[in-house]
Amino acid sequence: MENQTPVYELAADKAKHLYFSYDEHNVTFPHYHDSMEIVICVKGEFHARISGEEKTIRAGEIAVSDSYDVHSYKSGENSAVYVIVISRQFLAEFRNSHGKMTFPKFIQPMHGADEIIEFVSMAHKNNVWRNPSITLGFATYLIGLIENNCACTRPREKHNSRCVQILSYIDEHFSESISLASISAHFGYAPNYFSALFGKYVGMSLHDYINSVRISKSQTINNGALKITEVAAQCGFESLNTYYRALKKFGSIVKSSGD
Image (cartoon, rainbow, N blue to C red; front, side):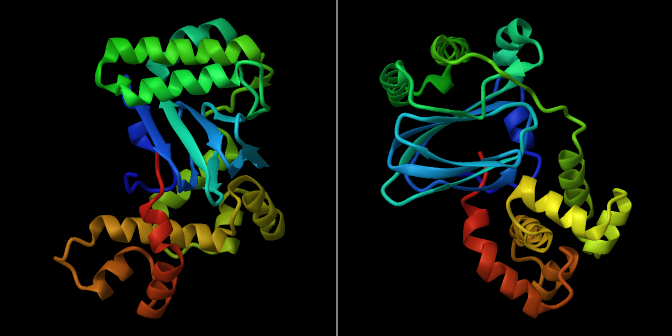
């Protein structure tokens, strides 16, 4: 998978964008976008967290992250999923029909699960994302298949939700000194409350999340022209020791994250 910063994913919101993959080892850090992300489990199980709610998704079940849901995934052993990210242009008819409502975050096995998996498997085999017209037809039909078996019963997240603001702030200020005290004060929360709120929605501690972003940024700018000490300093690490500890903990996972 592409190496992208685990916050706002700009690529997912490009015009007429469709990301479509079959993954047996899906580990994705918390991220968000305005697109709809559909993850269909076809074998085994994976753990999903969407806007603070967690669930183990098993074969035949679906996880749906819509506009600005903060979401992350981690596959179990011997598991396989299809990941489909559909940009807003391909969702126009669906969103016009349902307004502010969308699919539930977690969809249990449904009567049409086999039909959905068969359709998605065929589409992936035939590389439907190569043709914009076919892509639109694929996205529309897939959403229709899900809609036949599942009503839209939850509101979409607003783009100015507080969690999104916090993640965007970290993405903009990762090179600076960010502490629990400073960021909680910036957003008007008590530190303990802020820490609990962040952990609920993102699924990891503030400290770990900031370091994962910094490691992702360091991998982007480390092209060999700079010394490691310079890369670490530019990304907000106070010492090489803290950089190497974070690299050991997050390096391999950050490389595999993204849509």
